Image 1 (cartoon, helix red, strand yellow):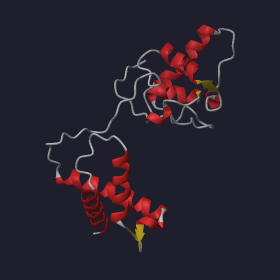
Image 2 (cartoon, one colour; image 1 turned 60 degrees about the vertical axis):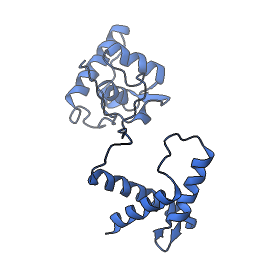
Image 3 (tube, helix red, strand yellow; image 1 turned 120 degrees about the vertical axis):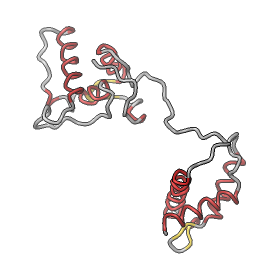
Length: 189
């Protein structure tokens, strides 16, 4: 089994109660799980997943030599509890995504670091998208078809004031309103 140091699996896969055998094969390969094609399971499988499937089959043969092997078309419907999935991936060898600690992939920007215009505009657009979502969900945050920055900023400020957020510097009502307005302008221009 090839060792992968980086994996492309979103963290929501980490704490499920059950995993299908096909999902286990993808996770063991360090890839985001997908269902096997029910009619032609081998046709679209990445080579690494095919090798993991062979490793899993060998483990099953070793542990239960007289058992009938699973057909790949059944792998989407055979479920294993989380602990059994962990043991199976451990038996294959290599890193086990299910037991690795969570790691943030968000870049940490030091306070004195200048953002490039592209990065700054990207973040402003994301702030505007969240403001649009709030406006869509509640008329309190909407004027016409655009978000109202002031009530959004005020409610965010209440959350900041009620909690312990050591990194909240630069998130006052004025800065929040300014970011929402600039982001909306970037999205609509």
